[in-house]
Image (cartoon, rainbow, N blue to C red; front, side, top):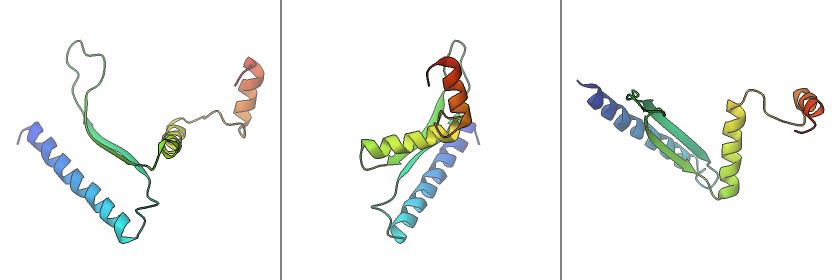
Amino acid sequence: MDSNMEELEFFIELRDKIDDISDLVDKHGLRDKFVSAFIFGVSGDLEPGDEKMCIRAVTGMTVVDEDELDAVLTHLYEQYNPEPDRSDSIDFWLKFGSSGEA
């Protein structure tokens, strides 16, 4: 089986798993409280001259409004960023004191 067919089968199976999560949310009656944001993908090979990585992906989100989206994206950023600029962190205040700005 060629790699394109393998990836297609992967994405079909992945979509089934995402549907299972949706069913789980409904089973527990949490649809009105459920928040999600996801991207699952496969990185592609860079072609000569390409500057950005190609990703074939399934994405989705469940948010009520822009405020909830902002909260989700902030949470994702903070999980990715190992040293967020937070005022309850000594590193925040050390950096603030040395540069004059946060």
